[in-house]
Length: 451
Image 1 (cartoon, rainbow, N blue to C red):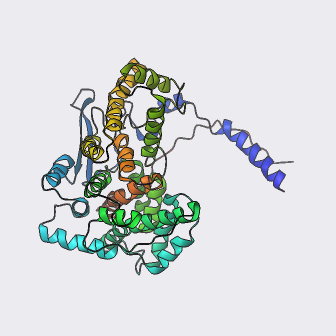
Image 2 (cartoon, rainbow, N blue to C red):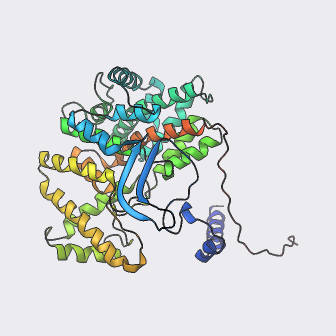
């Protein structure tokens, strides 16, 4: 039977190579927006939101798109202003960002205090959830996170209730519990896969979510104040990115069907897990480590550029023709998240005595953009810039975070945007399930019954 199975799988796989192939010209013929993108690379408008706004270009009536420095807004608040305000006061701000995205306004001092205490109070996991994480097998923490979220349905007294109050309660509970789930899952993977000691640390009271994550993951006295501040910054910058990013759109699509919160969030986790979305920073750090070993002189612009052009020509590194961390679907001149993270990454590199590596990464950013534009030439009609992934992987490495938690860390932050968009989707005055159309382009065939 095993041979028959293998043969049938092979036969079907060979057949699908032809039957699933669709000529690119058909997309133009039927005016289908592949990837929900317009010809000028802008996104097709499919919804309205009051949560986040991602700006990389402007369009005046009758004119083509014009690239502008990137801007990111949370509920109308410029993220650059938010971050620089927090840095001026020398304090963390992820909890404040969560409050802003969920509520629509900035909290006052008392509201922030109570809200932060609530997140801290809800962070510990139910005993059964802890034990079940211990039983979950697998090396990918994103899968463990997804299964843990689905399991939380069992412990919810009203899992199917989609009232505003219950949606908000579920959202806050999920946001609070993600750090513990991810930290515990990693320590279990570390124990079962690498034979290391198993540590399950109860979250501390009176500290930020960012610090609690580092404490539960690494233990006491194994992180600095600057580690906490830059992780807090990374969480702020990844918390929301408009309704059009792949995982948030997944959450909105599933939410529009009326499904429960846990099923919808699990779908978002599955989307974020993809290497073209949440896994990009892993590819950047792998590429960076490769370039550190391959480039003999980190200050030689000519040597670096020559090698980057080889990469673009698919003659070097992994031969995909990509320079990871360069380019974005919306940002053109600059990604504001990358600029903000880069500012603090420079400070962190000094603390960790890794200024030379940071200078090399900064040089790579500039030369990679030039190499990309030179390679593409007239074939590309938009500018490119470094995106947030270009620096986030290096930042996480300097903090001492294992690569296994890079993408889960993204989920730990983006759960805020997911839940805010789910609440909005389910509170439209006239709700409607999201159902786009597909054009069938197969040629009609004659049909006859088997003799």
